[in-house]
Amino acid sequence: MSGTNSVSRSACNSKCSMIVVSNRLPFILRRNEKTGELERKASAGGLVTAVAPVVIRGNGIWVGWPGIHLDDPNEKIPESDPNDKAPTAGLLSKKIVPIHAEPKLFDSYYNGCCNGTFWPLFHSMPDRATFIADHWKAYIKINQEFAEKTVHALHLLKESNEKNGSPPIVWVHDYHLMLAANWIRQRAEEDDINCKLAFFLHIPFPPWDIFRLFPWSDEILQGILGCDMVGFHITDYCLNFIDCCQRNLGCRVDRKNLLVELGGRTICVRPLPIGVPYDRFVQLAQNAKPVLSTSQKVILGVDRLDYTKGLVHRLKAFERLLQKYPEHIEKVVLLQISVPSRTDVKEYQDLKEEMDQLVGRINGRFTTPNWSPIRYIYGCIGQDELAAFYRDAAVALVTPLRDGMNLVAKEFVACQINNPPGVLIVSPFAEGRVCVW
Ligand code: GDG
Image (cartoon, rainbow, N blue to C red; front, side, top):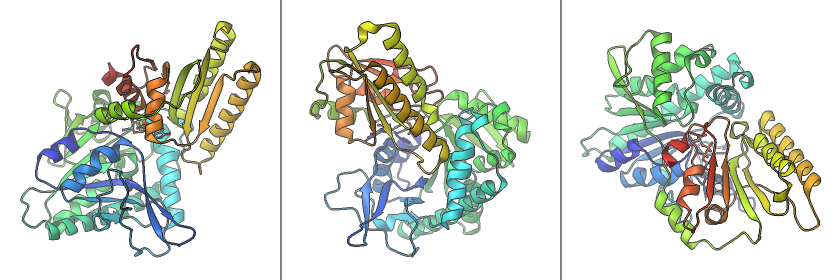
């Protein structure tokens, strides 16, 4: 998840405070094995870069899961390290409301319903989706827990912010939390707290014939419609959502002005394409030391290791290039950075296995004494190094089979400070391409 869009910009411009609610908190919590103390580590990604300063400036609060299950739910979240330069450094521990959940229940919610059902279904890959009632029940319970904690955050904000007139914005993020809004709204009304609710989906919203495969699809729509404003990356996703509201729930809708009516309320639906901190990437590219020492042309891939990113197809296409056009042998190198992701899930373990084998097979087939065609990094690199790769690569391959937006394409473009610039090859299924051009 990354970037900045108009919900954060409008919060920036107004005096109201913001409560951001996301599955994960904007940093990683780890236990130091030697001291046993909890430590905060910076986490990469544009959501953090763009939204954290808004939350901090507006004296706001972040609600989310800290990334580990704590035995003592009352254990204090530490302050950031004094040398921390991450955008979350100023987010004080009293401005964080952590979610605690029983590990098995959380696993059913996160790996089961979020990653096993919604991720593939919303990326229009229904044959990969599982529909399991217990996962759905876990999803409901964890969404209720997030709603509880958000209402607690609203109370904290009310106590500390009594003089501030404008109601706070509660900004709920992504497919993990599609049910939370109605419970937040109801409880806030009962407790006489005024707030505005917004929701943003970072992944595609699928067409109706895919969406309706989910057995509890009405509940999802009703959950999202608990907000005052609903944002998607692009207009197509807005129209898919509006279509589902009309066909599933019989809502009155206005396609031209992107509005949905439900229970006497009018909900605004808006395309809010997420961007990247462009100037930051230009600066990184200007300052980063070269890290590629090769005379060959580098073709770069940077992705989370996810089946939606088209990584297997990319490697096979590269193999085909070398087979059909052998003049490129010893002239080009594919540098693929694959960031480990959802490593508890079998499908992701299988994908890692498949990639390892494919890299081995292609390298085995084409390697010469002085050259190997693929350099494969399975891990996360620093943002400086990433900017140097973007800047110095001859070509970037962004080839998702389906992607909500895709920020790698935008970051690559921002880093093209050399003359001539590198070439971006981008799949028509990466929506980031619309904003790149
Ligand atoms: C979801 C949607 C949507 C990657 N490797 C490293 C690294 N990254 C950073 C990139 C970029 C981010 O991760 C990846 O963003 P994407 O947009 O490509 O993809 P998802 O993670 O799948 O994000 C997507 C996005 O949400 C935002 O709404 O665009 O469609 O799937 O920022 O720079 N960062 C560092 N080291 C790495 O090795 N530091």
